[in-house]
Amino acid sequence: MKILLAVDGSPYTKRMLAYVAAHDEWLGAHHAYTVVTVLPAVTPRAAAVLDKAVLKAYYEEEAEKIIKPVRAFFKRQVQAPVEFEVKVGHAAQQIAAATQNTKPDLLIMGSHGHGNLGNLVMGSVATQVMARTTVPVLLVR
Image: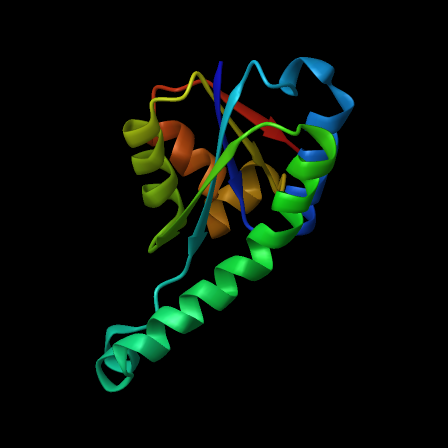
C-alpha cells in the first residue's frame, strides 16, 4: 500500500505519528511511504530582494526542522524506505497536488479538530484537502 503522510511539525503531527506507531497495520516494509511537508511561501516582495541561495537555504532549514523528527520516527519504528517531499505554497493545494503526483492509496494527516465553527471562521487544511482529492484520508486528532 502506498501511504502519503502530511506533516507540519505541530503537536498534531506528533499525535498522528503516535497513532501510526500504535497500529501495526500502518507500519512495515510492505508499505511505500511518502512524507510531504508544505512551507508557507515568503512573500513575493521579500523574495524579490533576497538572494536565491539565501531563500533556498531558508526553505531547506525550515523543512529540516519538520522532517528531522519524522525521519527519526521512521528509522526507529519502520525501517523501511521513505521518500520526503518539501513543497512551498498553500498547504491544502500542495498536499492535494502531492496526492495527484504520488497516487497514494491513503493519505494520513493530523487535524487540529476545531469543529464546524472553527472551520467556518479559520478554514481547515484537512477540509480543503478532502475537498480537492479523491484519495481516502485518515484524519488523526
